[in-house]
Image (tube, rainbow, N blue to C red; front, side):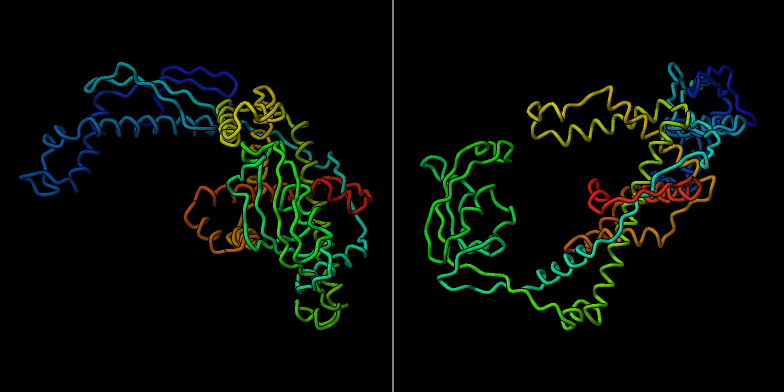
Length: 437
């Protein structure tokens, strides 16, 4: 068809509305091409595949062939138009063919948003703060102590030993609200680490000081936001039997322990911990610089936004919010209420930053390699008890893999941008560096 046959066009910012015409003859020719392709594989009584007359194919498949033909010719017109204008779609166009009938010219309209052109960004004008924390040797010793705790052995203590914070209490318990036992409030020979916060606030504290063989009551109050509505805010009494107390015996900090965790000596283990902690400090400092640069880009870069993308982002956020708060409805509290105005601003920010990073990253040849993806999936899998489930999830879920790739692309684009901005160092304590991590 050559050049796009749009009779009218209306352009407002990034929103386009165009009207085109496809002649009946062009439509028929395109539909017949599609019918001919159908005929190569179609099975109809009395005919061999590939030998079905076009007239017979029209009787059965004409409507679907015309539908495909219209889509094909509209897309051809649209792609020619986009190429001529040097513009790109921000989303799928909306088509309208109201009143068209087979055998007639098809007048149609298309509405669509286009992607904005990213303005030049002079990154060298921007300055971000790089937080630098000096490694505290107390953190190294704390890590060594954690290694000892993780390799400790819980030894059963004698009848005269009183349970202390950090010990394992082996207990039977049965819970009551008033005089009624409640469902799920009973267990036998349960192993509870005192001080772990695994039970209702106050429960573990009341076991501390007791000895093996003691029978006693624990009185607590369920939190107001407890997941079981019938127990939330209720006073409860637990009948407890303490069968035994086990105290964690820590191994000595020596070269033998160091070798058990893959290092040759205690000093080598200390150096390994220092290296890991310094890498963690650098990662958190880099994260903060990325966030600061995002704020600068959101504030300083002027960019028109396609309404299609903003609405899509807003609707997705609203759906997520509704799913996340379906369990509590109107009782979630003011802090969790949906605010249209605020959420729309947030959606606009996310779209704006996404467009900036996508355009700048593409223009500056940022790419996510297969190795990048593999490393990210391995890192995520390492956090789960069964890493195989993570690998299977990404193998079966291409959308999730695409989202991971997108997040990695944006991070790599930000890191590439940070090599062009100015930085000023700020000395901070480690706890200040990690307080928002």
